[in-house]
Each structure stands twice: as C-alpha cells, then as structure tokens.
Amino acid sequence: MDLNYTAEEQKFRDDVRSWLEANVPTDWTGRKAAGASMEEHFGYLRAWQKRVFDGGWAGVSWPREYGGRGANLMQQAIFTEEMARVSAPPLANILGLALIGPTIIAHGTPAQKERFLSKILSADEIWCQGFSEPNAGSDLAALLTEARRDGDHFIVNGQKVWTSYGWAADWCELVVRTDPAVPKHKGLTVLLVDMHSPGVEVRPLRQMTGESEFNEVFFHDVRVPVENVLGAVNDGWNVAIGTLMHERATLGAGLHIIYRRQFQRLVDIARKVERNGAPAASDPVVRQKLAQIYSEIEIMRLNQMRSLSRISQGGAPGPEGSIQKIFWSELNQRFQQVAQEVLGPYAQLDKGSEFAFDDGQWAYTYLRARGNTIEAGTSEIQRNIIGHFVLGLPRSY
Ligand SMILES: Cc1cc2nc3c(=O)[nH]c(=O)nc-3n(C[C@H](O)[C@H](O)[C@H](O)COP(=O)(O)OP(=O)(O)OC[C@H]3O[C@@H](n4cnc5c(N)ncnc54)[C@H](O)[C@@H]3O)c2cc1C
Image: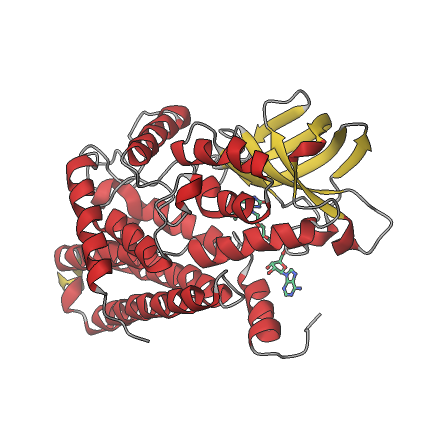
C-alpha cells in the first residue's frame, strides 16, 4: 500500500486543521473538570459535538444524503488524527456516531433514517448499545431479554448490563430474543428503543476508576412500536454483528496519536523523576521500556493504515478489525504499566494533589486501561475470531 497522502487528502487535512484551530475549546483539560458532575461534563461534550455538527464535521464519513460529509475512510482517519493532535474533547454521542448510525444506514428503513440520523450527528439524541447481559457477553447469542409481539408493538422484558452511557441515553440499539424455539442465533431481533419509555429503569454501576460510565438497564413490559425493528424480525444477529464490526474497526482509530502525545508527556516526566539518584530517563532499563512502547505505537499506526486501506478496497469492516482491537487494548495496558514504573509513588496521586503529574491522569488511565481488553469483545474472543475467520483455523469451541 501507498503510505503517502494524496493531494486531496492533504487538502482535507488542512481544512480540518484550520477549522479546529478556530473552534477547539481552549479550556479542555483532557478529563472531567474538578468538581463537575457527570451531567455537567457530558453537557460540555454535547455542546462541543453540536459545534462540530454546525461546522459540518460530525459524521465525516457518513454519506452526504444522511447529513455526513461523504469523506472516505482515509479522510475519516485524518479527521480523527487531527482531533487527537489538538487534544480536542471527544464527541458526546460516540456510540451513535461510530456504531449505531452506520448500522441504521446499513439496515434502516427510509423512515428510520429520516427520524434518527441527523439527531445522532447533532447530539440532540444520545444513543447506547444494549447488547450484553449478565449471562451473555462473549456469547452474545445466549441473551435472554425477550420481546413478545402484541399487535403493533413488541413488549420487552429483561436486563442488560455494562450499558455505556445508559444514564445519558435517549435511545438504545437493543438486541432481544423474539423466537425462543429456534437455534439461538436465529431468534434475535434488533429494536430501536426509546429510553424514556415507561418501564425502562437505569441503575449506575461504579467502576474502579470511581466513575459510573456504564449501567444496568432493566426493561419491565416496555412497549416498542413494530416500526422500530431494525432490519428484519429474527435477523438481529446479522444486524448486531455489523455493529460489532464497526466497533472493533473504528474505536481504535486515532488512538495512536493520543498514545503518542501521552508517551511524550511520559518521556518529559522520566527526565524529571529520579531513579537511584539520577533522572529515570538515564536508566538503561527505563530507556529500553520507553523505546519498546514508542516502537509499538508506531506499529499500531502502520497497522491502522493497513486496515483502513483494506476497508477502503473491500467496503465494510471485516474480521481483521480484531487484530487492531487486540493490539491497541493490550498495548495500552503495557504502556500504562511502564508509566506506573516511571512515575513510581507519584503514579498513585489523583487529581487535586499538588504533587501529581498531569493532574493525576496517570492513576486514572492505568485503571481505565484494564477495561480495554474486555470492552468491544475480550482479547480471547478476538483471538478466536482471528483464528477462525482470518486464518481459517478450526473453531476452538
Ligand atoms: C468499559 C466497558 C464498556 C462496555 N460497554 C458496553 C456497552 O455499551 N454495551 C454492551 O452491550 N456491553 C458493554 N460492555 C460489555 C462487554 O461487551 C462484555 O463485558 C464483553 O463482551 C465480555 O463479556 P462478559 O463480561 O459477560 O464476560 P464473559 O463472556 O463471561 O467472559 C469471561 C471470561 O471468559 C473468557 N471467554 C468467554 N468465552 C470464551 C471463549 N469462547 N473462548 C475463550 N475465552 C472465552 C473471556 O475472554 C473472559 O476472559 C462493556 C464492557 C466494558 C469493560
């Protein structure tokens, strides 16, 4: 593949860069402001997405007819890189933009596209992904939340768990069982569920970072109109797999820039903190470890380019997205471990401590990285996918 940017791509980068220079908030510190509630923080991100939308940059790779910019995947990657380069805040409706909108574009009726897509882009409606259940995570098809047909509605009962942004969401892409009598993959349906419907109950789950990013969501006799079926009834497995492929292929995009910036900060810290009476940066073991992380971030960037080039040629993301997912999630854990070793006791200081580096972000990023190898499918599951669907090996289970 050709790793150089075309003149058109370079022009696109210049356009993104000048828009960001004029519009990116200058008060963003990289994490929730001290003392801000989760709602205030989310409101900040929502307002930022609205600004991006008004500037015509939300959903850059979505087709123009659905309010996007019609950019190709390479341009989408350039946009994400430029956002990361200026440390722009993340967009609030990340699941809607990266996973659920593209799934509605692929499987939605014209009425669903008209109803939902532009409000995803503007962050007027926030989306969550209701897939996992207490006994159905890796084995998603084992899910038990049921939807029974009742005239023009489905009646939904059951429980989801680990629902990121469930507390903020207006809508949910919900996978339910509509036919318990057929093999488990064949009796599933995807419903677009209004989270403000009577019978939806959202309970926060506290993570080890101290945040409640995700939730348990309970459905008690929730009525969902039949026109909110996404795709066909009992074809939900196909629809859900499309969402997961987008998740694995896109969640890591631009991360190499974020890692590179964090890495540079770690190098600066290594020059300041001491190890055996000298700056840590002069210790050969520390230098080896930093060099290793630097190289791996570069490998990640090149893999990202390769995967984008494949997707551009082949259309929708395929199972190779699992390679990226394993690489970025496990690399982040190795990187955060090295950061802890370089920082030593300073690593445990959280925001608010006058001695903490980077306002205590390293304690947070270390703890948050643990979830990376679980979310969007665990590393074991990604290896199974690579073994079976990429390498053609027999199934291991
Ligand atoms: C930060 C975060 C955010 C999340 N957000 C969402 C969300 O918004 N919506 C949503 O629906 N879900 C979400 N999840 C849930 C996530 O998708 C599941 O946690 C994940 O799929 C694993 O499922 P599980 O937790 O049930 O673990 P299990 O499936 O019970 O797995 C337990 C262990 O067994 C291993 N294992 C299971 N099956 C196999 C196999 N066949 N071969 C080898 N090893 C196996 C797994 O790798 C794992 O180590 C989130 C999770 C995290 C951590």
